[in-house]
Image 1 (spheres, one colour):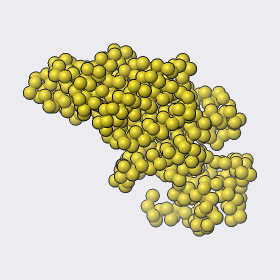
Image 2 (cartoon, rainbow, N blue to C red; image 1 turned 90 degrees about the horizontal axis):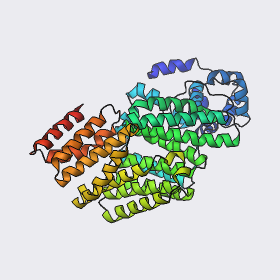
Image 3 (spheres, rainbow, N blue to C red; image 1 turned 120 degrees about the horizontal axis):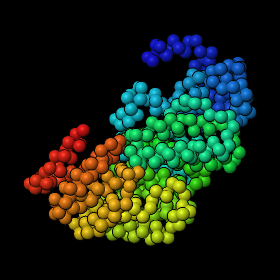
Image 4 (cartoon, helix red, strand yellow; image 1 turned 180 degrees about the horizontal axis):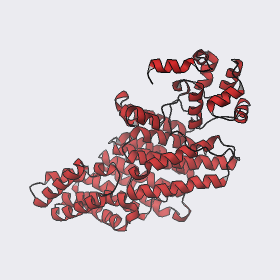
Length: 460
């Protein structure tokens, strides 16, 4: 809508745009105090019936909000802003994802507006606030948007409703592991759009607490699938929402897991310093939770960050801590969101860290990387196809580094075959080292053939 069209649309609106410029109204909007906004509108002569009609709420809902009921769900806040004609920026609300896609093609085309390193620092500051207890749910000054709602949520929810969200998250996560984020991200976002509305439903305190955790986990999955499809801004927003909800649900293991996942995003962006800070924050949350498995996950990823920074001593020290904590962990009683980290993943992380060290520090690390990666590859089933592809690529890289080019080329071809059908932008990024090593050895026919196959794969 252009400026003239917007002006024409406002002419017929029952609420004058001047109302939103008054100091007390601007303060209420900035704090997202909807009860105060509605009270101010009543002073302006806007009836409860008009407010209900404009916002799509029932008059009883409007009455409850006027009495002080909080509105926290992003989707409801967005609907209220749009219905009343409030400029979204006054409430710290960004475009929702669907609108952004229509306007600019994709959320992450905003890259030119803000340097990526600034975005990383902003998220790190937000994560530190939430993790250390300086921020609470709904208080973030920055909008971390979600998608618009499609199906109305019930006015009252119970444990059954929350369990349905948890079950949907488990099913969608399994699809992500097997086929990649691109296969299921839209479904995750749609499920989140519906589930997010439950925050505005009435419920007992235990149900609300469990809902916070369930939605935090779903936001985390939305962040992970966004990351896997290359939508970095969207990933950051979902992880930020996930952090606040997990903290609101007082679930330190989940806070640790979310920080681990966002740290992995920064490793992917070749920003190991920023990744390390998030992993260290996650380690604090993991230690507070008493979860040895969560501590193991964070330690292994800190080792990866140190390896990327060519700090061999610290990388090996943290890798040792990861092994020790995993050995102490009670896997049967571990929380659902850290159960993914099993013995196979431990070997995968050992192989990954030693692969990075072999390329950046000392070739001797291939002797540790190859057996660990081989065990991981042999253990991964079809349900973990993406992880298997990553590890096959790393294994092929190590064989090339060792000079076993014909075998490395065979494993590299197996990695390319495993990558077929995966809808994951990360696959190409994780195969870059293999491509670089194959290119260096193009005087060998096996390496040359692999390099050409990889070139075709990257061009697709």
